[in-house]
Length: 333
Image (tube, rainbow, N blue to C red):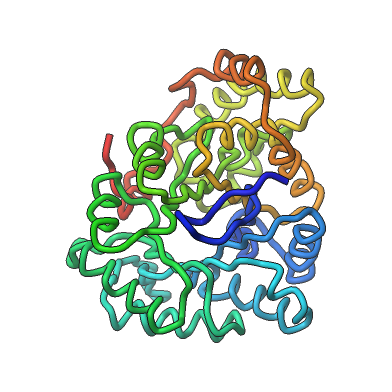
């Protein structure tokens, strides 16, 4: 499997990681046994990067990973673990807010370490920016957590290139996480370039377009059963039908190339920059195997050109987020 670095001088990781939001039932039910099976198969495939968060299932994703290591202690050193904090969620009202204060990040990281059963994580992100705190001050907080031995490196999720440069002027930033795929190409307009220039890894979540870039895209019934999809513009009935039609040619191209569509989507993304590390989420070992094929070897230039012809920039119907979902991520283009 191809490998990448988590930041300049950082640890080498598999070019494909595991997004563990799927372990929290976000896209549908996932048993602990299924999640542990995915981790076992990931290790067999050479995948060694796990990405989770304190907010995924309100700690459930971290607990599942922690119990995996408790049952399989020999596996702890096989994986690089990333987690996040900075989002507050009120379980009674359902309201969401952001907190980048030193006290919040420190206490939430302590709780994550306890759930994961580890002394330190390999990467700790601020999940969303809190405008009350200058990013320079937040960067100093994160650097202090590294100095305290609670994290080996830090990063930010869904920030603008300008924010990354401000943070990097204080301390090297190992990684920035952003949605990035053939259907969400915003990072091409500055974030990829900033990460390349600063030696920061660009960890790409939703790299197969939340299922649109696979051989089995979500049906209307499946989308209707998932809370996130019910309010997301790309998965509303009319847009979903148009997006499935738009990606039919991509699935045909993948079949002609002898690859699963998900593998082709991963291969395209890895070709964008050596900084890119996709972290697809899955509850299925079979789907994980399809994804891993995309990180087996680089795609040929002519195939990359065919992909661009089939899915040109701007093909997707609907915004990647609803107005409510856009609260938190930084817009920069």
